[in-house]
Length: 321
Image (tube, rainbow, N blue to C red; front, side, top):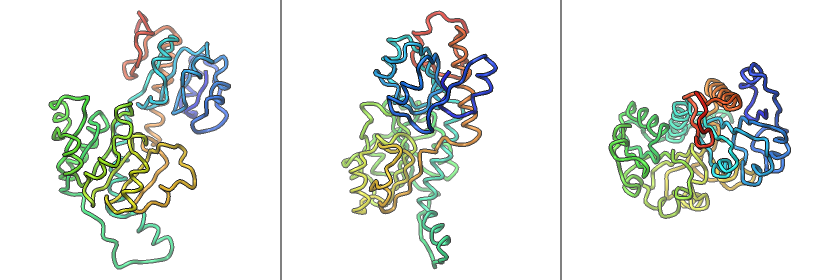
């Protein structure tokens, strides 16, 4: 058993008689590191490491990839399916955790908290750092799955009008999650704040590019706690530098870790955090335990518990619950 998501899952794995092998370092491993770590391993508690065709082809003993969280764009699911490897995600409480963080980013940038904290830390004081109201404004939510719906619920507590866009959901489902079903162009044009919660797919990659940014209000704030590749980074930098949008708060990037000299680090009106939206003590423990339970079930010849999502159930065949 190769454990890449921290020690939280160790207890249930050890109780199941699993041998735990840890990766060489924290953070996403490159392909060669991952291949070396997975030699002889039959199951993995995965984070954002690249489970590519090459990696999976070099790991003939692997039977299950249990992903902590809901994102699985780093896993080649068709390649895993061809090799009979079950791929499981662990939604758990992550939607509420990420929704909390999304609103934290939105409020921090709207009220200029990073600037105020930096000023005070440097011994300064200012007559005022005027921000922008959140109460009663318009929020556009791109991606109305569990996280988008949780963000919409929080927005209603702030008396906000909520617009929702999701090409994969019927309008009734979007409305049922607390948002007005809206075309993307209209959402961008009418929203004071835009939050991104879409899955990364070939269709959504670069969804927020130069054209989309040009439709946003010059005072609008963009928040991304989903996947960095949803945004064309070059176009966003240009819009921030030219003052064509009010600001951006980003927790995900198309390069991770973000290089020390990356231009986003110096971009105006830009708040950056190191992909920590799901990182609370409670949620990390919950995801790790769910992933461990799912991996143990598959290795024991059973289906994972119902609180885990199997992305390729066909590989499980007729396994009992």
